View (cartoon, rainbow, N blue to C red):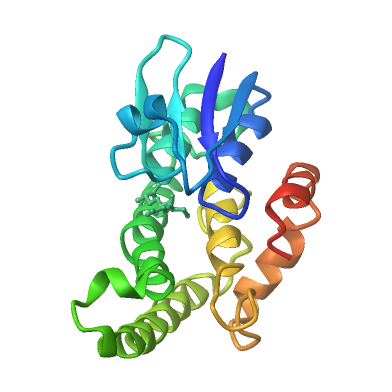
Length: 205
Ligand SMILES: N[C@@H](CCC(=O)N[C@@H](CS)C(=O)NCC(=O)O)C(=O)O
């Protein structure tokens, strides 16, 4: 049994998705932002979700690491290209691009006060974060040219990660219309039964 600490509307979405798409038993613990339980903080000292406890008791944080590990541990679910697949470099590239560049840019927008010591600086941080977010999404949109999915010719958990980030876009909670390939990918993925069901709690769209 996996135990997952998550919260509606958070990066826990992709971790819940990979576990459910792989058909794994999971105990879901919703962590309130205001009063995170001590056992959760012991695993996730920054108080961030998602955090995962593996069946053998080991614990980990980081949405991308959780997604990659669970997908790799359960190859039969087909959620990540195999390590020797030609699609593997793209899979790793975009998973890390999203978790190390796009996700933090969105965090700078939503937690702008953490990125300046000047109260008057918050709006400037937010504006810069939005511009950077747009620049990064445009890179992903271009990379999707001539292909349906981020890695290879089938859906992977990287696409679910992109769907999640795209619906955090500060303008309208959805990808900008000009990113036609991201919009198209999201439209197709929203029809996935697990994605559709998870959205009932996460309410991204
Ligand atoms: N690098 C982490 C970031 C996780 C993160 O920032 N989670 C947000 C929710 S989307 C959170 O729990 N924030 C609470 C806080 O920072 O106080 C990951 O990819 O899992």
